[in-house]
Image (cartoon, rainbow, N blue to C red; front, side):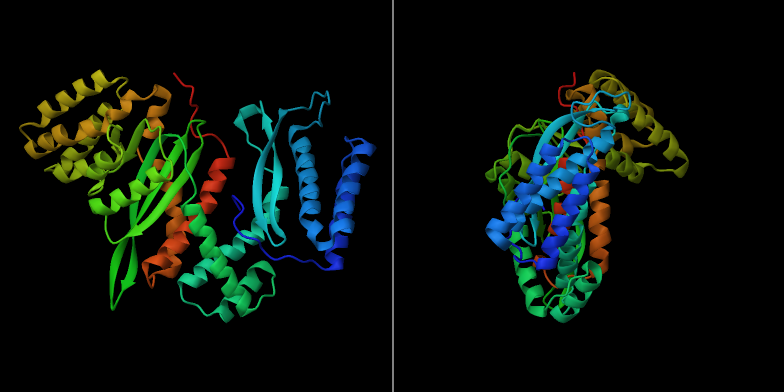
Length: 424
């Protein structure tokens, strides 16, 4: 998964190797749109790797097999083979994108087929590759979940065997847990680059500290790069959202190479604004409009006013331009100056913080005016952490959260663009 991070297990039985070659032969017979000469050369290449290098050649052979399977899938998805003229065609090949996957025979770089001009914006990702890494994902997440719960390696071995069909020993599980820690640490410290937009968020989980239970803040940063794809840039666990913790988290992102930001979006987290000014001075900050709308309820003196206030605030946020939003905000303050003076005062001080997004291209504003892009991320984190309920320490919480967000960011980076970056 992701960049090469562990060596994995090497070694396959002779029957497994024969099954691999037979599977390749089946795929070759199925690919009627490719010349016999190409079939023969690919098969010969795979067999040559195995016969010349033995078990050491398995990674190369698997790379050939999976690459060919993915080409078949792309041809079936497009309704046409390479250079084939047919009315059934529904798009075109668009080269390949390298992807390194850690498997039991080592790290293998595959060539993932890309497509373009597909109707209705449909996306393509080969099931051949997904099936190949599913058991690896299940194994790693199972180990991570059990590890943070303090389950014995014997029980972890039984669970992974049930999930993945793997017969493993307690020693192997302990080794896998150590390898997982190394992999997660590498991911958290990977180099970053240019990201136009960064969204920051925090959530809380229960952690045992000494003899008591307290809340720990999980800090998350998501970026949209210059090509419009999302990535989870980093995660961190701290005792609170104090400025020192946000500053440490943001400074780590900066040292890893994060730059080129046009805007940062977040809720009004404690200590975040001061940390932003210290680490990324001059970068505009937009406060999440969804949270602003929700916070306004606390300043509405009567329940009967809530719908009217919510409607007026939506009009401010949905204004076509910043001057229009400012005029609507002035009208909102004047309207409620007498019947809700605390609401009016709060609006003057806080609502403008959610209007910085008007400086962005109009097609970007709707998606970047809130932190809603993190909804799925938070749901997945919660789905995993609620199993653990209570973590024995901060490191345990960080381990599981990192394993989850690695899975999600991989889907984001290979999926559909989040924004079209050449928008006007």
